[in-house]
Image (tube, rainbow, N blue to C red; front, side, top):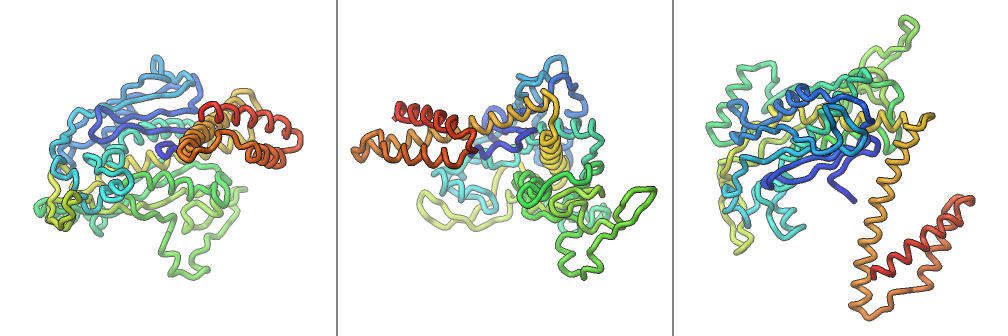
Length: 419
């Protein structure tokens, strides 16, 4: 599985890490001939960029995307779009003393268990990876706007205090910063203009798609749609959204559901809230362990960190939502395709899935080959191959059975050759 990719018809893959020379994104599926508003995209990225504001990380990154492919004279070519963002202000030395000491609240410990090392600055688990996410999401926002769909987000609360109480929020932020501590908060996202009926149930629902995308933001720990968890304390008579006919249209009289029922858009604004945990990198002493000597230690995290990541995360939530919803919208269009370009986009999506599965299969075949050599087993197992061919032929539609058998005979031959 490619865990750095999202989407089918609007598909993007992020790459790089916090302390490598760059981070970036490849976007596939954008039709040729659509212009990109570069100033608008840059303004969107600037909302997320560090180094702005009293409570932001002092790390300064210009975050100006360099488009290497897929864009000519400001117009998308129809091919894969590859954009990079250079890391010009990383300080790996700040993390030298943490190579064997996992930071509480970070992915350091499970990453160490998984890979045997703690990545500097969080590596690809870092919030830095939300920069290329914002490139993909910023483009998606522009493409959705062309469809009449608007994606916006706002801060609802910081440290439990409503964002509208700016004086109290500022005081809380100043206190946390002075103590070397941090705060969390809640961001609300609203989407207007989605066509009713968009989405599907059970696993293709809009909540499912949005959750997968939004939980890719490292600090997100909770998600609710509409009235969310408050619905659990309501009666059905309070929670249900009624329907009325107005001006010849069916409308909903309230929006407790957040614009989604049965995984499908209702026609009302889609509303969800994301809960962000406090920034885990803090100067307050915390308990940890030095894995090199298996000793208990006390840790204060050095480096440059946000007092409250929520302040920079609003556009990131917009980006994740926009990318997820654009993919859902284009998928629904593909289901109703009737013209050659739309059919070709379907073929492109299918070919990407086939390629990824084919690569995984050959990689697994390589491991099987190594296992067979280690145990002195022959490369070919005729009985196993025959059973596989017979089973797949039965699973295939009757009119494709012979084609499937021929395809897998070729795949088996390639696998044997590699082994």
